[in-house]
Structure formats: C-alpha cells, structure tokens
Length: 263
Image (cartoon, rainbow, N blue to C red; front, side):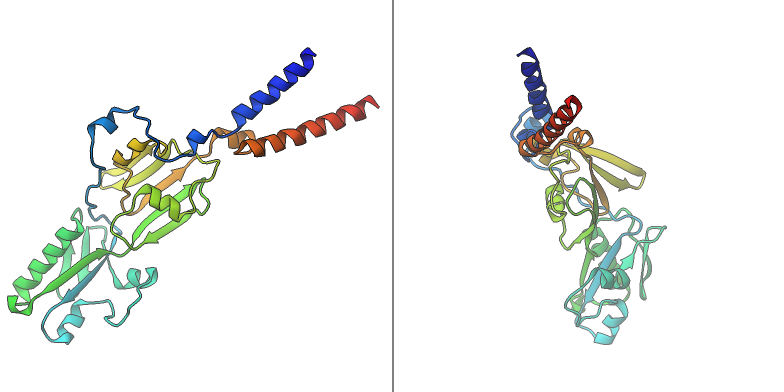
C-alpha cells in the first residue's frame, strides 16, 4: 500500500513540476510587484537615431523641372509597390563614417540624427543651394523598413521587415508566430546596438509593467531571443495533457518490462 502511495506521489510531483503554469503563458498580467509600474505613466519610446548600415529613403518634390528632381530622387516615381530589395538598392545606406551620398549634395552626415532631424538638414541644404522658397520644396525621409530579428522558442524565427514607424515587442513576436509553449516569457532578451556597443535588456512579458521597459518598443536592427523553459530540457510536454500522455506511456513501458522480467 505504501509503495502505491509513494508511486502515485512521484507521478503527481512530476505532473506538477513538468507542466507549464498558466501564469507563465499569459501576457501583461497586473502583478503590481514593481515600483516601476507605480512611478511611470507612459511607455518609454524615445525617437530612433540613425546608425551605421541603416538604409533611408529620401524623396524630394518641388514645383520645378521634373528632370531636376530626377537627379535627387533614386526611387522610381511610378513604382507603386516597394520591396525589401528595391528599398535596399534605391535607398541611401549610412556608411562607416555616418554619411549618406545624395546626388549633387554629396556626403551628408546623419549619424546620430533622428529621421526628422535628417529631413530638416537635407531640406535646409537644398533651399540654401538649389531651390527657392517659391518652389514649395517638400522632403520626405523614412527608414527603408523596420528591421529586426527573432530567434529561439518562437514558431517562425528569422529576420523580419515591417513597414511602420514603430514596433513593440509583442507585435514583433506576433509577426513571428508568437512564443511557443516551451518559451520563457518571463525573461525575453532584447539585444540592441548603440554607438558605444551592444546592450542587453531583459523584459518580463507576463507582467503588465513590461510596457514601461525601454525594450518594449523596439528599435531597428534589434535582436530578440526567447530562451527555452527548463521543462523542455527535461523532455516533458508543455501542458498537463501532454505530460500525462508521456507519463502513461512511460508507465506502460515500465509495467511491460516488469512483467517480462518476472516471466
């Protein structure tokens, strides 16, 4: 009798420890365990500043001869749909010195500038040297796609490009098929490039206070890594049903082996 109770207790313990609790799967729970959630009232979303290897798209319009505008504009005006490839080849890449090379204007330093600051700089230089105010100059500068990479325990890992100005980490993960049941939502790593080097942020996506993290809103070229839970290395299923199935199978094999040894 004691042996049966002991065996049942061991099986129950395995079921409890091997399953992934629902609290580890639900996003943005109101835990109220950090002072951060009490102090801050708005998510952190600082404007992105251009770095080396970024690709920017520059479009210039004005009430002047179209042939003059064609010199500045590398993007075909009649091309309605822009792809990653066309944006890469037609855009301006920030070189190792922080410059982009624009026809006629030449080298324009944009390293550390926001997209809006870059637009203002190009517009001022064009008005000073090539256009009059009567031309109603219009300059539009954008990043050539919001690039990021997701790896680890997600259903669709890899590098992604979204055509929007800002992306939060939940949107990025949803675009990658979401985190698997075996992925750790409590310690999501976001690796970010700065002029001084790489920095790593850890963010708990099960806590509602995650929206106040500096890593909640991504920056272009961020790398997101989802590490596996310990349950995966143990070889158990992610849900109670999966774990129970594994335990029943293992018990059946053990019982069969016992009966064979007795015979």
